[in-house]
Length: 344
Ligand code: KG4
Ligand code: ZN
Image (cartoon, rainbow, N blue to C red; front, side, top):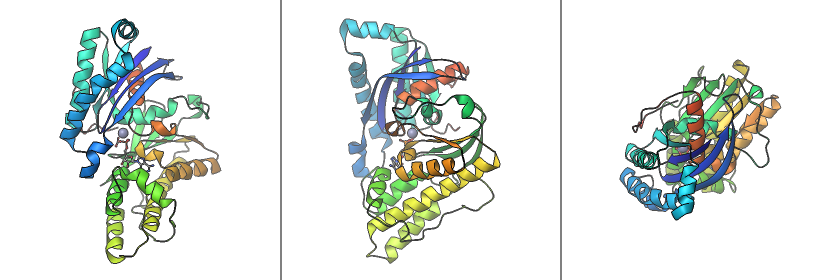
C-alpha cells in the first residue's frame, strides 16, 4: 500500500510518501520520498510558535511540497494513480494549523478519488520506531512487547505500558509543562534561539552537568507522573541570583535533571511491569543524553531499547503515513476535524 502522509500540527509543514505492508504483528515500511518545510525562522523572533503565522505558512507551503513530491504533468498523474491512501494529522496540535492539513487532504482525496484517514500525531511519534533504520535491524514485535513507551515532545510527556502496537495504558503524564516546553523555556532564559532543545544540548556540551543541583520534581513519588514547571522556575531563580553563572553549566545541569527524572520513572515502570523493552519517541527523543540514558540503562537490565533514527524524532510526515497505515489496520476512525487536545 502506498500512503501519502500530511502533517501540519505545529510549525513544520511535511509531506511524505511511504510504502507499507504486513499486518499489525509485522508491519514493514519503506520511505519513498519525504519533505519537511520548517517555519523556525518565521517563529523564532517571537520565541515560540504563533498559530496564525503557522496557518498562513502551511497554506503557502502545502501546494509547494505537493509539487516537489509529485512533479507536474503526466508523471504527476501517474504518481497520483499509485496512491492508495491519504493520511493526515487531526490532532493534537494547534487547531488553525491542523485545519490547513485537513482541508488540503480533503481536497486531494476528492480530486484524485483516494480514501482519506485521520491520524493521531502522538501515535505517529510512538510508532516511528518501526521505520527502517540504517544501522539497527528492525525488531520482531514479539520481542518488543510488553514495552514501556515514553513520548517526550513540545506538548506532551506520557509514559505508556504497551501490551502490543495498538493497546496500551497511560501510566502517567506531566502535570504541568511538557519536557520539550521546559527545554524551550529554559533556552529562552539563557537567551538561546527557538526551538530551545537542540540549543541547550549544544551548549551543554561545554558545561558541567554536576555544577548545579537542580531539583528533579516527583522523581520519588509513588506514581508515574512528571512535573517540569518547578525545575524551570529553579533555573529562573538560579539565573536571577547568580548573575555570573556559566550558561553552559546551567544548560548541562538542567538537561541532566530533566532527563534523569524521565529515565528514572521509565526504568521504575520497566521493572514493575516486567516489560521487555523501552520505546522512546517525540522531539525530545532527538536529545543525545535522553537517548543514551535510556539505552545504557535498558541494556544494563538486559532489556531492549528502540528509538527512531535521529531525523524521525521531530515532526515529519513519514510518521503520519505510518500512523495512517496502522490506524487503518486496527480499523480505528478519527473524526475528520481538528482536535487540539487529542491524547493517547
Ligand atoms: O515532536 P516535536 O517535533 O513537536 C511536538 O509534537 O511538540 O517536539 C518538539 C520539541 C521542542 O520542544 C524541541 O525543543 C524539542 O522537541 N527538541 C529537543 C531536541 N530536539 C528537539 N529537546 C532536547 N534536545 C534536543 N536535541
Ligand atoms: Zn510532534
